[in-house]
Image 1 (cartoon, rainbow over the protein chains, first blue to last red):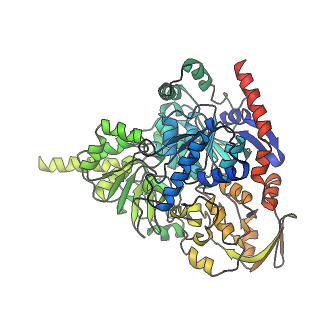
Image 2 (image 1 turned 60 degrees about the horizontal axis):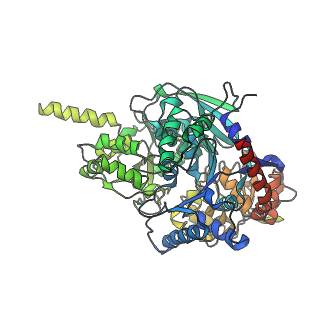
Image 3 (image 1 turned 30 degrees about the vertical axis):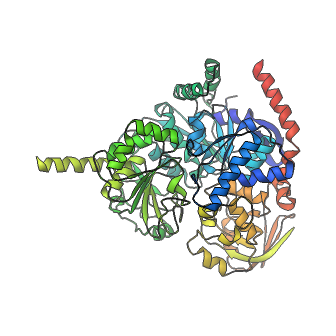
Length: 457
Length: 179
């Protein structure tokens, strides 16, 4: 019988079938951060003693608000530190930390064929590696650390076939927004999105991470890409860093993380990458987005438009912005920073702009290329790595009615600050918008500069 | 277990967890004390909540609890005194968190949710899986395994009892990989 990749991952990890369609699913790796882990970690220590299933399967990091912003977040970070030390768990901390969904692949904690969980909904990012990775609550995460497994209902599989190749300034972020818009904000609920088809091979690992990162925004349990030579090449780099010796043997196993030819999906759709254009959101969930050259749709929900202070039919490129943010687990990797820098090079931002790399390693790599100079010469703020303004928890919080164009993943009411308005877009679109002070495509920035040059000549 | 109380009707689809409790309040290391922040991220949420100070049942629309995995959403709902959420649908992670924390998640079709708009109270017999409100009587489904967790707690104890089986499974997996 032919199998989807998800079916292979699921079947290889079911310890026991449980009543009501549930299963006990083995977890190869638990990722822990300071916001959601302390609660569950302390609870299981208190109730079950100093006994974890396997501390070597856990990796911890302070990532959301690091360094701490106040006493409460300092306590969270300190609890994570002392717990990790007590339990012998590897911890990444100030100076060498970053967003867990950026750090985990970068440091080689994910491999094809694995299952991973974290108390964080964007854990689905790691599905880019042919793994089943999902966000869970703090108690379930604690349970996975205590017992090595999760209780899960088996999701159905939504096959999204990718054909063609990205062009016309479209990026993986535009693909991710297109998929969420196509499936709908809740259309993926009860499903894992499995990407397949010839278009997958055209995407880099960083692009696949951006794509899988937003599976949760369609309500899906996770997003998964098959492993291929792109995956293997990336992993050989990270695994070498970790001192792994048996790379050829492991590469053969990695390559097995793909669907059988002709595998049957419970639902399916096809996206032609060639047709995609830069996107931007206009509403209050990530599914409410359109090509940036278009207008706010005539049938846009009134509630979303009221909150966003927009009207149906309004051209998206006329919307003035107050702030720009490049970063988050969706778009804070080196390729994202390069794309933003390409737009900002030799130009000036016209609104406050915050650029937050996804990890300290990304930050250093960007600085070796001089990207920090590009950003700072353009008048943007270049920060340390963290989740940053994305979730309105520490720096870069929006004031009511303030409008921010952001390379992050959520435009919910109040997400980046009470009453704040968020437009989601790719790093290049955010950069172009930062320059022009309104939602803009990167092509416009180029055109304008050409026009000015022409005038001078 | 019977949940019998006033209804707070939250007439919005996609009540995400940032609306239920904004991230700036996720700064604790325990499960308590989040009720004061409930719905502070929702436009008009604070006034809505204040309009029904004694309510113990939330009724809402599609995709309740979508977005972040923060269990704080379920803790805030429980801490504020709500014992059940009736909705047209739930996001997966919130649904799991509700079961784990004694918040009964009841899925009803759109027309039945609409009917609840016109009544003040609901009585939910969790064991029998039925909502009674005014003249209405709506049966509902629960996950048979997680139903025990919502009734009696014991999620972690259930997993703790599985540890030996999980270790045995992992040993078998290692043996198979080495052959």
